[in-house]
Image (cartoon, rainbow, N blue to C red):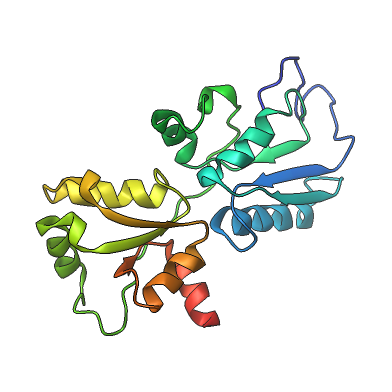
Length: 210
């Protein structure tokens, strides 16, 4: 999404053309979910000849992507800067982390969705989804769950919905929050967290590297 302009800048309309490089402001460190998506989009757009200017990525992590949106919001009226939306754009406002929400920015397109995957240690007694869910439902605070990149992310919301479906209180979850999914997975490997909830692609890629 680009920043909502104060002036009537038509992106791609009325003969308007890019006049400088496009900047993707990404709310995760290099290798994070938003970073991978931005690089994929950049590759597709450049390979297909959809843009005739260079495209660059700026990583500004923090606040579940909130610092990236802060930087985007500061570029009022600049059609050459984009960012990627995620759930914290809404939840940060609810939590008082940010003083704005999606209405301050201009949505462009819904580009993708992704599956999540639970990761547990190899020796964990949690061998299937039924056991995992029943364990969490019996006592949400009993299991340390590692996730990224902040409270209120898509992963956190999905986990909360699972607990609500099971009749448990998601506010009682024992969460360990990390800036990057790789760190959350590493926390489980080291035996600190008992489960991790990254995107499925993230879990496969990081497992293959280890």
